[in-house]
Image 1 (tube, one colour):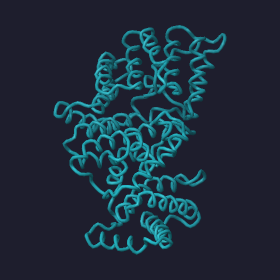
Image 2 (cartoon, rainbow, N blue to C red):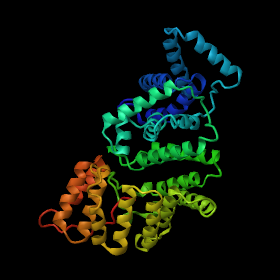
Image 3 (tube, rainbow, N blue to C red):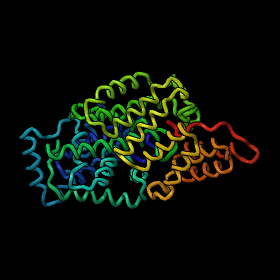
Image 4 (cartoon, rainbow, N blue to C red):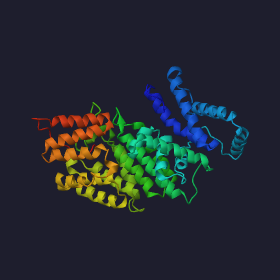
Length: 422
């Protein structure tokens, strides 16, 4: 994506258009890696020219034309030029040529989730090519070092280059598994937008909006899939709280301190309707369960009236269906609200040796909140500071530092909020 310094409006537009242009080129020409390189060059050209000359009347067509010229220039220097031109002409003759208006983003998602790629590579490549995340952000989402993630993405692109896979919907036998991976990718894109893993902003609304848009496309293409509806419901029920999740300084506001009048009632209503239409009608999966948890929070008039025993029970089922350290951490938070901080602290202790969470700030942040609630300000302060050192998010780091400062020598600090920022 464009470098820092591009006006926000231009950068947002380029991020929105990039996967659509890449999908168009990949459908017409194949050669995913060459098309991605060409689109990246077109994005750089736009980032340089548009702020000076203005956004063109049809920005998507402008990007597609520039990217296509880059491909043609590259192929003119190669001996395979004639064969590729014949292939393109044949595709156009069969009606498979690129349409200026067709949105190929969903087809691009399925391409990135090709079965020739290992599941982690499918996720990483899709986040990079379709979601617009940087390699560093993808690495953060997977809790792995950035150089390792860069190698994973490069290998995935080489693998796609080596196979002859038609662009478009996958064969019926492959669709369920690739659909599952696509949903996981959209889930990760949404999470990165809802709470950015790094940078100066707590939220990245461009990513949450794109994840919701793609999830709507997915629901329309898979109307009988309960998990697709559950994923969209989860996103809407969670995104509904976004306006209340940060204070005027951009710092996180914990869930139990949020002004619920600022929650988006329309999004909540749509999310609950989606969830109601799928629960009981389809096999229950992890996205439906997470959406049900989000609905319990959203339907509570106040934080005090939250049905925490129901939340705890739902997390228990979720951990059986889809176990992960993040699910266990969230179940620990719910357990604290039902049985007190000591019970949760004991459960957190079982996660200290889990390498997947060793460099993640949330374990220490939750530990700090619970120690504060349990009347141990000194230990809580140290845990807040450890959490602050582990996060790359500037707003979260500042919030955690302020919590630690409030527990400094001679200061009792205010009552600890419920762990997490909702």
